[in-house]
Amino acid sequence: MAVEEETLRLASGLRIVIAEQTDAYERRLVRQWARAWDALYATWSDAMMDLASAGIDGHWPSRWVVSRSRKAEQALAAALDSLTEIVSTSEVEMFDAVGKIVQLTPEHQVRIIASQVPQIPEAQALLSISFDRVDQTALDAIVERTTKQITAVTRPLPAMVQAQMREVLVSGVAVGDNPRKAARIMVRRAEGAFNGGLTRALTIARTEMLDAYRSSAAATEWAHEELVGGWKWLATLDSRTCPSCWGMNGTEHNLQETGPDDHQCGRCARITVVRPWSELGFPDIEEPASIFPDAQAEFAALSRDEQLAIMGPTRLQALDDGLIGWGDLSTRRSTAGWRDSWAPTPVGRLLASRG
Ligand SMILES: [Zn+2]
Image: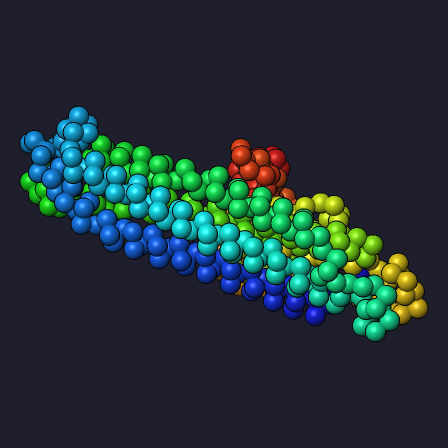
């Protein structure tokens, strides 16, 4: 049961290892996307100038005229090509990042387990906490599931982005007497649609990679079933963390439960909790008290501005007034095509339920 300083230190070390993988993947994707837009820019500028000049009486050309524009069609085709190229090259990098996350996690997770047992050679020998116990087939299955999930959502992205760019083209902009200015606005809007695809790709990859870490951590626990009592939800308690994660921090879960089922892009960690030493066969060694970051105490110690930034004014006031409790901050929600997740309870619902 003794989650100690060392346990939390190792957990934040693992968090850094995972972040290195997700961040590096994201940086590459952002770079590829930016480079692709740079390469498309001239084609799009030219096509938009063409359309803006084809307008009549200061109006953007009709849907029919737009759909007949050869330059516009070429610009759209070029966007699709370059996105298809990015998505296919990034798949290789994504496989690589997911593989590393899934493989590195158990190495760290076994140290997290080992930090919670009596620090004597007999205990370490008797309990045989080891990476070797983790089932490689289970890890491979996590990699396979994760990469499948990411590709399933990412592969249709180029066509979706192209459709959105086409929508931008058709809706147009008031041209007035300055086609050059109108063309510039349209290029910017097209760029916005193009980058919308990037935002989506980043969200998917980050979310699934973090889930792969959590699954790999769970697989390590399951391989040490006789030692592990369950796990605790650890949130990064800072001003970027949402009310739901502040609320879930420290909650206890049984071993078989997957998770933490954080919302998209959530950064929460699964902290293995080892059984009491008496149950491990060391009833005579006095076990230190377990420590765990106390979200409510840490929140209380923040400045008013930081508290406001996390909770927003209404939620914070309701907490202060005792209208809602810490446990009300989080709500389980279902998302089509994805797992259930814990997200902030909307303010309206929070207050309505307290009538
Ligand atoms: Zn959150």
